[in-house]
Image (cartoon, rainbow, N blue to C red; front, side, top):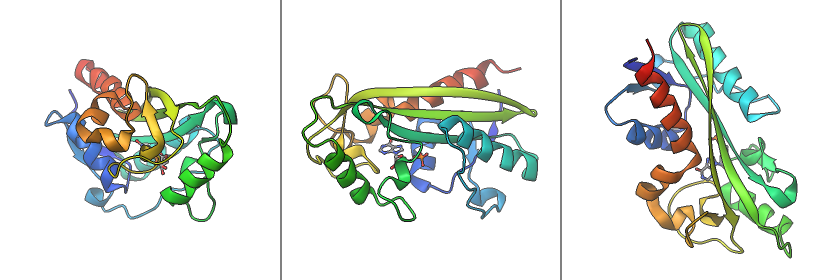
Amino acid sequence: MIKRLVFATNNAHKLNEISSILGDKIELLSLKDINCDVDIPETAETLEGNAILKAEYINENYSIDCFADDTGLEVEALNGAPGVYSARYAGGDGHDSLANMQKLLHNLYGKENRKAQFRTVICLIINGKEHIFEGIAKGSISKEKKGEGGFGYDPIFIPEGYDKSFAELGTDIKNKISHRAKAVEKLIHFLKTYK
Ligand code: IMP
């Protein structure tokens, strides 16, 4: 099993979340750990495309085994939006979670169908070969924000089988059922059996 891997992200929250799912099985290095301070542009039109683009950038420039992820919130009544544009849904430089949630609640106003899913795609490059893993968390969009925890769209996403938002459920539960956890589980299973 591989012991060291670079996770191509600058997002400390995601790094901590994935580190805690991985436990001590794998030493996870950040972009900072390999002295990479580039904000790799996510210019692809799909989650898969962005994950591949970021992993290839690190692999080609640093010659190291690595993985990258991309996640989107796909809302059924909005034909899969915001999807790959989740971070920048409300415009600007993106990552304005409050504005993104407000726009989503506005666009869903009066709609019966509030079904949605988070989808994470991971691209792993190991010994020069690419492998793709996907994790999906199904649920629905609440009518208002609930809870203080988490990040992004967590306060308005109610995972299937629960009546609380990801923000209310907290990290322990979220890390067991989330899109990212499911994709990482597949990644770990692959790494454990990798020869
Ligand atoms: P990223 O590809 O992980 O950076 O995710 C893109 C955007 O999707 C983020 O900026 C968040 O708005 C949203 N997002 C990703 N994962 C989550 C999550 O677990 N909870 C809530 N929002 C998320």
